[in-house]
Image (tube, rainbow, N blue to C red; front, side, top):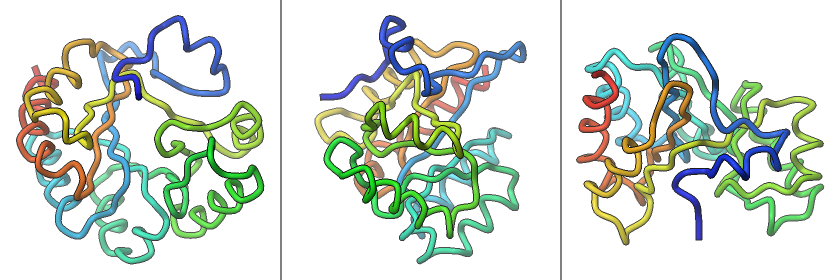
Length: 194
């Protein structure tokens, strides 16, 4: 079970976590988790370029290690990167020391002060520990593109129907999401552009 839109009432409970980014530019913040992927990430970069959009890619360390040329391309095209752990661990199912070690290992490949916990699963103790070195970025809107129970049209709806200035929207540049992302992302980018 996961939340596609974090309710406002929950946000104060995670005071070390960032769910949205207030701004006066009418900007929202696109993020992509789980890459880099050798085919999907370059496709995502092409889509972002078509719409003159920038994003933050939360990279899994082992994927960044396998595809350093794509990490370089992400940065060269003016996007940002963030740490998504070395091996996509759940903070709820991992001892604190093993979790911190995995985050540190990822930081050797992904140089960033941004961190997103895989699955959004992080304990209060872990967030207090990691906030010393990282801004912990959650989300306000989740496309659910990774979930095979939804169609690409569902993902468009989840990623657009509640967005507003400051929203942090999550997509995934991964095999698991590809069949939905390929149709949903261009529609979402067209909507955001308007």
